[in-house]
Image (cartoon, rainbow, N blue to C red):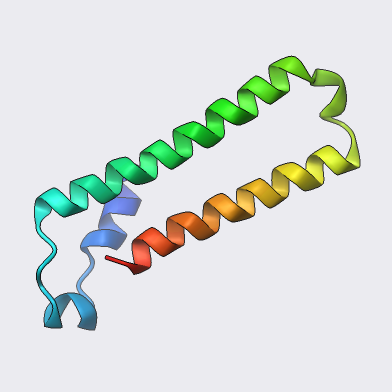
Length: 83
């Protein structure tokens, strides 16, 4: 997953050719910020699951988890598109 994410960030496109001002340090910062978002999500999910195992089968809980996954997905794509 890490390699795929870096491949997307490093992929040459019109924007990167015209505005080649993203250096390796910036790419590393973007990568670690993305990892931080993922770890926060994992921690939040795991803590909720550990504290509320009985709620994990409820429809509302599943909908909330999906909503949070969609938000995480949007945030990660925003990071990729800002490269």
